[in-house]
Length: 297
Image (cartoon, rainbow, N blue to C red; front, side):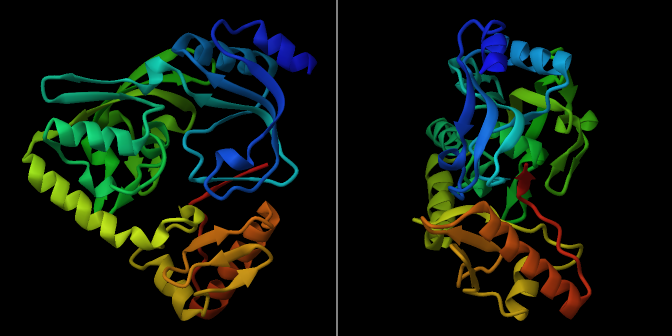
């Protein structure tokens, strides 16, 4: 509580709270509380929170939509911060360039682009989360990756200092962005082509139908990264994990690389099922699956 009060003194528009529950802020709906929590309502407060933590050696985790994280049952040490204010939920257009704040939900960016017939990001339809999380992990689906469309980003280093990074310096890789390993996104600029509104709607409708089976599940999407030249889902299917359960966690019958949870689930259930999956695939196929979801402790 004393640290939360100290942190609050550095903020102007935002609250700082101690022992903030995280489960309902994640796709899997499991996990404990953050030692410290700030939903930053302005870029100024996000900068101040990072500088405060940096000066005191407090570890920082950045939470976007919460669809790629698994907080431990015993909670998360340090500060969890979410870019949440109007500045970081803004979309604007300058010619062919569309700029979106880190807190913009991907679905809202796609709706905005469709209304203005700007094409290129339709492959992300149905992918949950925010622009910040999507760029940081170079989110992809159906053969596309968001990094292919990013021109530049504005971000904050861990000490709170602002940087601007151009595409060629960002270090995009499979489910990664080197520039955001030690920085927090403020805004990303995308080059989107002029398109046909009806064609964009049709493509989104088609992809929505392909993802319809996931509706209603509490999930973080793919749990494991695809190994080079193969698919984690195929390896897990061959290892017999479709519908496999452990406690309140279950690998879906449609796609075993997607774990869903029920009300009784714990983060430990999810982690134990993931470990069983990885161990079994390593034994059967000689491939060690690497988590795509970020495990926070």
